[in-house]
Length: 119
Image (cartoon, rainbow, N blue to C red):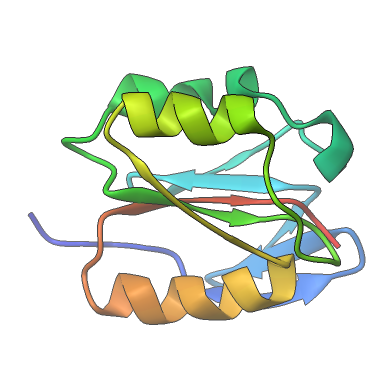
């Protein structure tokens, strides 16, 4: 299947520019489709916020690339354990680093979901 992953052209000022279009707030990119993501701060992140990823399953998502906001932080155990139980990996880092890595990984054809908290 051909990939049509949007590039992350820019981030900051509370949003992202994806493939030339501005998206306000946090974003979840799943199956190469960006969508608004209601998470606005890392401290309130729960496994329920990743429900679309869990519903897609390990067949579509190798791992989640989680942008934790302006600083890197360890996601809650609930999230780590829930994704592991679903057979989905987790990589986490501050959002600027995650945005840069997302472009590289999608260019390599990796099957990932990006959950990026806006900075």
